[in-house]
Amino acid sequence: MSLLVRTIGAGRISIEGWVPAAPVRAWLAHLCGATGFDPRIIAAAADVPPSVGRSLSNTTRRLKRMRAIDAQKLLALDTNALLRGSQLMISSTCAHEALKQLGPLRPARDVLMAKLQITAEQADGLAGGWLGMCPGLVVWKCIVWCEEIMHQRLLQVSRDSSGHPTGQGWQDERAA
Image (cartoon, rainbow, N blue to C red; front, side):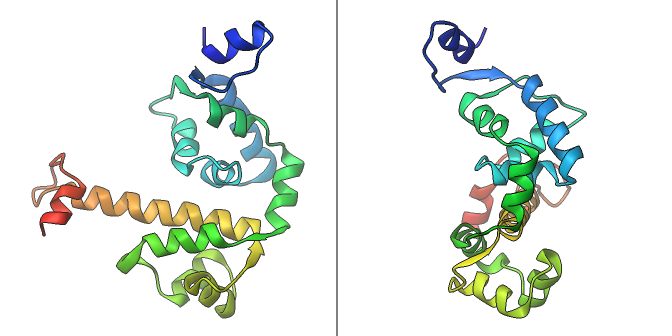
């Protein structure tokens, strides 16, 4: 039994510890089906790392437990809130920070426009950090896409020339 379930049963609500992932996985599948959004985008909308959404939706290797705080955030979402939030204008600071962290891997304006389906002015604003607000779905997609770029880059770096994992990841890149 998880810490969250024990503390709720005792009359206290605590978001520490680990909880079973199955109910959250089912809820995420429902949200994906109802909204048509990718699980990673829904995770980003819930302020949960997009990799959690990817892990929950992975059919080959099922996640058994997850952090209670992430479960609480995902379970707090509903279809209407997601659909409304995707259209609302929200701060684009998170998207700008995600693009900034890519450094030299940051995509060009044309690629940003095509991938995020935004105008040239919006792409310049996201990359430059001067765009204050944009639709929630654009911010969420940008965060997920930046994480995907970094994930692919780390996989690339962590493999040697023969294609076998080196297990060194970022250490190989720093040495180069």
